[in-house]
Image (tube, rainbow, N blue to C red; front, side, top):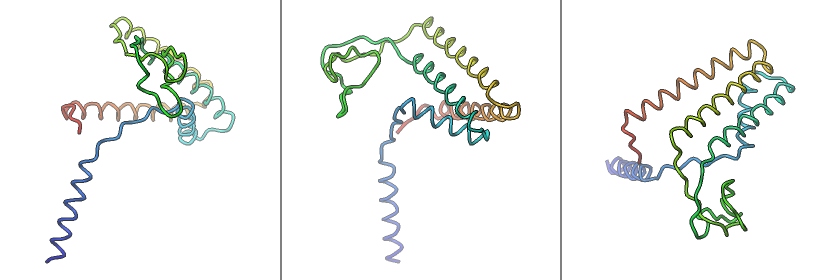
Length: 173
């Protein structure tokens, strides 16, 4: 009986510690690593040969560069040191006007207007359409069908997660 009580106390303590942990924020992955992972995943899913894999890596690199440029926001400087100074240097933001690493203005994100957001969305759509056209040239008909089905499944999964998040009431720990 004492062992059972002791085990119960241990489980409650371990469970409490697990719940007390803060959720970890996702780190922004290096674009080259994202391209490599995306290419490897697609090569595995679609059974690509080496020539196709090389072409796909180039297409993925172009897409990621376009997506990253769409996500850059206008920024306004504040006086002081960059809050993102790390051991390796400053935040390395494209919008930072660096004099020297860590010795530049802090940057504040400026919200986009509706017109600017619509323009970004349109740019992203056209980038994806160009990417799809490249994929049609790179992949065989069967591979492209598999790609399309997997893409639709990912979109459906993303939609379900988004709806579940909305139903949850945007509650976070």
